[in-house]
Length: 403
Image (cartoon, rainbow, N blue to C red):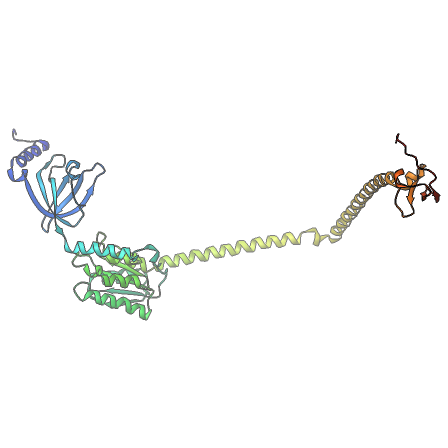
C-alpha cells in the first residue's frame, strides 16, 4: 500500500518526466490551427491538429505580441516551444514560443477568399433574403436521389403534411459534375415555377465532400433564384457558402423539411382557433348591436315623442327670450354711445357757437376774416348770424393788441 499515489502526485511525476525529456523541452511541431482564440489578457489559445491527432496549445502575451501575422483557423503552421503537463487538467499541451506560417489549407483558403469576394458584392446581405410561404403549393428538392438527405426530407414532410407535393430534381452532391447539376436544377425550378420553395442540400461530410456547395456558380445561382431556397448542407457545425447565400439555413435536411413543410395538425388547430375567435367576435358584435337597438327602442323619442317636442319647444322659447334680452341690452348700449357722440358733436357744431352770440365774417369771395389785416376800409363783407346774414362795409379797421 506504500505505492499508492494521489492524482496530484502522479500528475507531478508525469510532468517531471516530460520536463526532463530533451525532445519535449525544445520541439518543432507542424500542424493546422483550429479553435484559435485570443483572450482579452493577450494570451492565445488554440488547437494544433493533423489528420491523425491534435494537441492543445497556448502562447502567452509575452510571446504573442511579437507575432508578425494574424493566426486563423485552418492556417498551417510550425510551432516551436515546450510540451509539458498542465497539472490542473492533467493533460499535456504545447507552450509555444513561436508560430511560423507553413502555408494555408488549400480549401480553407479558397473558402475564405471566395466568401470575402461574394460578401463584398452583397450576395449575403439580409436585405436580399426572401420569406418562406406559410403553405407552399409544392416543395422542390435538389439533392442526391440515393442519399440519406432525401429520405430524411421525405420522412419529415410526410409526417407533417402527407398531402404536400414533393418534386425531386436529382443531382450529384459531390464531385466535379455536382456544381453544374445543382445550378441546372435551381434554374429549372425557376423556369418551370412549379414550386414555392426549394430545399438544396446533402448530409454532412468533410470540407472536400461538401465543396460543391462552396462553388461560386452554385452560390450565385442560389442568390439569383426568384424562388426562396433553404440550404440544408451537412450537420450543425458544417457551414458552406450556400448557407450564407440561401434565404434560410437549416442545420440538417430534416430541419429543412420542418421549416418548409407546415404541420397539418398545427394548421388545423390554428384554423379551428381562428374559427372560434371569429364566432365569438360575431356573437359579441350581435349582442352589442342588440343592446344598441334596445336602447334606441326604449328611448323617450320613440316612447313619448310629444314630451320630446314639448321640451324642445320650451327650450326654444327660453332661447328666444334670452335672445330678446341680449338684443335689448345691445340696443341700449348703442343708444347710450350714440348720445355721448352727439353731445361731443354738438360742442363742435359751429351753429351752436353762433347761437351763443358769435358771428362769422367773410369777404365777398367767401374767405373767412379773422384779422384786420385781411380787410380795407370800404370793403364789403358778409356777416353770418345764428339766424340770417348781414351785408356790411368796412368803415375803419382797428387792431386790438389785447387779443
